[in-house]
Image (tube, rainbow, N blue to C red; front, side, top):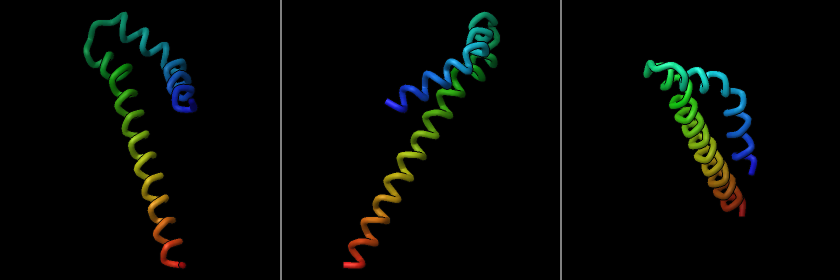
Length: 67
């Protein structure tokens, strides 16, 4: 649920650039206002998930080593 909330907060804050991109025709505006935020969000989420998996595995290995 937090991910959905974060997406909505990000899109609300980026609402005016999105509207400006839709009203203007140049492709660079659409790229910078619509495509790049989606790419950055996906990359950030991927890094977040990979780090969580890494830390869980490291903790699991440390507890197995102590036993």
